[in-house]
Amino acid sequence: MNELHDKVAVITGAGSGFGRELALLCAAEGMRLVLADIDMAGLDATQALLPAGTQVLTQRCDVSSPESVEDLATQTWARFGAAHLLFNNAGVAVAGPTWTTTRADWQWVLGVNLMGVVHGVQSFVPRMLEQDEPCHVVNTASVAGLLSVPASSVYCVSKHGVVTLSECLHHELRTANAKIGVSVLCPAFVSTGIADAARHRPAELADANPLAAPFEARVRKAVQSGKLTAVDIARATMAAVKADRFYILTHSNIRPAIEARMRDILDGRQPTNPMP
Ligand SMILES: NC(=O)c1ccc[n+]([C@@H]2O[C@H](COP(=O)([O-])OP(=O)(O)OC[C@H]3O[C@@H](n4cnc5c(N)ncnc54)[C@H](O)[C@@H]3O)[C@@H](O)[C@H]2O)c1
Image (tube, rainbow, N blue to C red):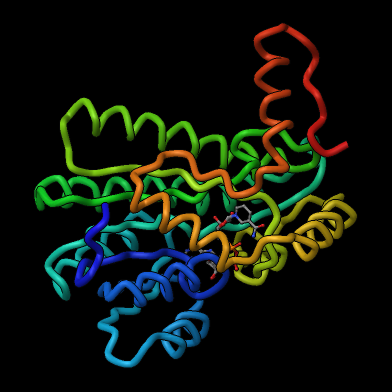
């Protein structure tokens, strides 16, 4: 999808991190924007960074709620009459040993990271198919969708789900001769708000893994020491959209771990720990 000027981009999780930088790049392309998040202050801060004259709709949207995402689609078409680029980007993270994960950990993270993408696809793709114009869907997964990282099973399960969902969607849309491209974004650690994801954890799902603290501290340190920035990730993502490239692997240093996993599977070996 090369012609972006005046087209409509919808971005979830646009109040921080990757979502904010994607919004700025889309605005620089002359796109009209629909920015969604549960954090309205974050959305206001993103909006304040946009070039003057950018046409933008900001909307509170909880991606874990199908009704909330359906309303986002309804409001998008009411305001702009179309959507061409959908970034299912909102996400949260938890850490800790699998055997002490709580039901709330699973419900929260799968609700946002996996069902959020499902809801985005269900509410936007049928309308895009009807629209019958070139469109593109970018689902934010992670290298955690390609690897199995100790003390990250909840997050890894959610992101592996996003990778396979995206692959299935790609095949289905190709088979249907649809004009909708798909990409799956798989970054490693980048310094954003992700280490503070619990800031938006719903009170009814507050029951967290009792052994999370040391593992969360490790994730925070890794995130903070990430060499690439959110701007780098957003640039790589936009380049992939323009080139209609499916896999967006932003961190080349992760490739050996992905190759090792594939070799382990094919050779019937015990899994190599990607983060010993
Ligand atoms: N930063 C990293 O190291 C990294 C690496 C790989 C993948 N990711 C993924 O990138 C995506 C963006 O994360 P980020 O790093 O920019 O983090 P971030 O915390 O800076 O941004 C995430 C945004 O999602 C929003 N959000 C949280 N729950 C929501 C909900 N229920 N509905 C709508 N919005 C919600 C937050 O308010 C926040 O604005 C996530 O899917 C994350 O899993 C991040």
